[in-house]
Each structure stands twice: as structure tokens, then as C-alpha cells.
Length: 504
Image (tube, rainbow, N blue to C red):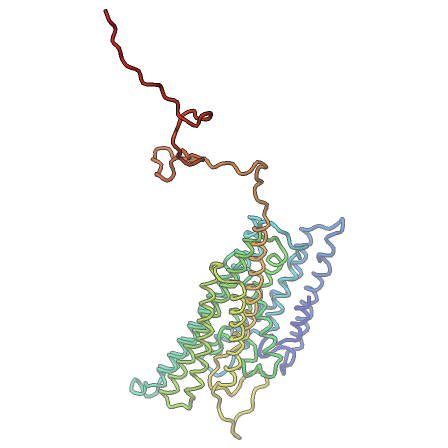
């Protein structure tokens, strides 16, 4: 319910929302109406009514779902409107509306309102039929849709960039470095953004607990990042569109990533955080795998950011643009260091070979480097010099950065890195609990007479080795046998006799 109310005070696109000039009053009325329906769904069919004798779970489920359908349709309308404007304004200077953090928070609150809240966490194995529920199937559909929209966005923007670069009034003779720079930049930026969306969208297609945990962490981080970038004064420098997602290749990942992650995280959260839980060993493996998924996304984006910065440096050198080689290399070094550390942690988290304290400390270092990347990305980014003839800045979007590589997605990865740190701490606690239980397990009782003597066991069909053969052991040392001398201490012998033959 808090997300639904908070979404009223956030921008839904570049042209509608609190704080955006010229917002439609009629659209505000529609938003208030669908928000009221979603809030009523929580109040009428909420979990606090489940204890009543006349409570009907099936009817409550249908009621919650039906009251939240209008809200979901409104969010879908914003997505369709942005796609329409993207096609309409393709190749022009006009900016599409995009999909803002208000829609992200709204769809997350809508999905939570439409689900029955779990009464509490239950231990034991997850039911086999859990992966076949309607919410998981819906999340898979959203994952496929986000991947398709990301591919279409990449192809559409690449088409307009290449078309612009190939259109020259001077013909083939005028085709030069600037045209090559436009094409190379469009390809590199678009591929990096596409790969990031595809890596994260794969989590939505899986029904494992690790994928759900990673999706919840990413969706929550995305919501927090969008809100911070919009509210903070520095948000315009972090993201040229002030936290409102765009599907342009220079804006990182667009609405096809942020909106899908927020919706899927809300679908997964109740069952993942408050539903059935596995045994301690399975829980440890799930949290470790979730951390590895997040580290993979951080590594991919770190390497991609480094590639984009090197591409911008190459373009600036080839076109004689003003640039700072030192600043560009420092930014690339932060990206590379974060990616390398994330890769190392991902490899070593496969097995519990290292101590939990070391892993937690290095995960904290990844979070620190992620925050540092955002700071240096804003401070050291090249900027255009302001002049008296500079046009007035738009109240919602735009900045004076010469290149926009740091974006809302980098802020979202900071939150994801903090979630990875939390997962490492949880994994260490589960591992310690498992070790303590193993040590405290009762050992088999030993008989009072002492341990039984071991018996030699010779495998059938195989000769026993010499060291394993049973031998006779004498308890005392060897001595010379002297007969019965207990009385005289002398050995009794017979006297000699003369042999006399018989006489006949």
C-alpha cells in the first residue's frame, strides 16, 4: 500500500507527474481512481480477514486480482504510449516520454496488492507445484517481453543512428571519421545495454529460489535508485533524464529493464521471503547462488562501462575533441577493478572453500567500489562549458555532460551490491549453524566393557597383504626349557648303564 501511495508523488514520464509542468489533470484523476481500487483490494480481501469463519480464499483471490487490473492497464498504457512516441520521433530531436519511477513503484505496489500475503515463513521443502503457479508464469511472460522489447529498442535505435551516419549530402567522399564514430558509439552503447537487460531477464525465466532472491534484490534496488535520482539535486548529473527511463542507446537500460524488474520482484517477494523455506543446507546454497547472479550482472556492466569509456576516448582523440586522458583512464580503472573483483567472488562463491569473514569483507569492497564508480563518474565526466548563449535547461531532463555513461542503473547496482553483502552475511550464518549442528550431533554409544577388539576382514577373492594377516603374539619374552626343576633346581637325568647282552 505504501508503494501505491508513494507512486502518486513520482513522475510517470517526462510529461506527467508531480513536479512536471503541464501535467494532465484528467490523467491525475484516473491515477487516483485506480490507486483507490488497489488500496480497497488490500482492505477488503487483506490477510487480516483470513481468520474469519466466512472467509473464502478463492473469492478473495479473484477480488484482489480484479480490483488491481485497472492499475496494471494504466501502466501498460504508459508503456504503449512511450513505444508509440519512440517510433514517431525516431531520428528527430524530440524526446519520447519514457516510463518513470512512478510507474515502477506503482506496478510493484499493484502486484503486491493483487497477491495473498503469506501468513509467515514455513520451514521444509518447497512444494513441487509451486513453480507452476500463475504468478511464476506471469513473471516468465514479463521476462520474455522485456527481452523482446530490449532487442527491438536496440535494433530501432541502431537503425536510426546508422541511417543518420550514412546520410551525407556530399556522398561517399564525405564519409569520414565522424560518421564512423557515430556508428561505433551506437553499436557499443546499444550492445552493452542489451546484454545487461538479457542477463537480468534470464532470472525471471527461472523458478529456482536463487533466481527469485536475485530478482527481488534487483527490483528493490531499482525502485530505490529511481526515487533517489529523482529526489536528489545531483540526480540530473547522474542521469540526464532525471531517473525517468528511456530506451535510447545512450541512456543505458530503458523501461524494458526497470519496469520488468520492479514488477517481477513484487511477484516473487511474498512467496520468496515469507513462504516455504528449504533446509539449512539448501538455503545456504540458494543465497550463495543468488549472490553469484548479482555479481555476474555487476561484472558485465563494469566491463561494459569500461568499453564505453574507452570508445568515447577513442572518438575524442580521432575527432580532436577536448578530453582528459587521465580522467578517462581513472574511470575505466574503477570499472575494471569492480568487474575483476566481482568475477573473482563469483568463482569462489561456488564452493564454501574460503572463510565467511573474507567473503563478506570482499563483498563489502564490491559495494564500496560500486558507490565510488557513481561518484567519480559524475565528478570526472567531461562537461560542456556554459556560455551566455546556452539554451535554457529543461525543467525535467538534460545536463551539460559531454558523455552520459553513469546512469540510474549504476545507482541500482549499488543497491544490488549491498544486497549481495547481506546475502554473504546470511550465507556465513547458515554455514556456521550447519557446522554447529554437525558438531552437536550425538555420536554412537560405546559398550561399557570397552571397545570391541578389531577383527581382521579379508576380502573374498583377494589375498590379504602381509601386514593385514592375523599373527600369533606371545605375551612374554622367550626362555630355555629346563624341565621340572622346581625342587632341586637341577635337571633330573638317568644314570649310565652298562649294556650286557643276554647269555644263552
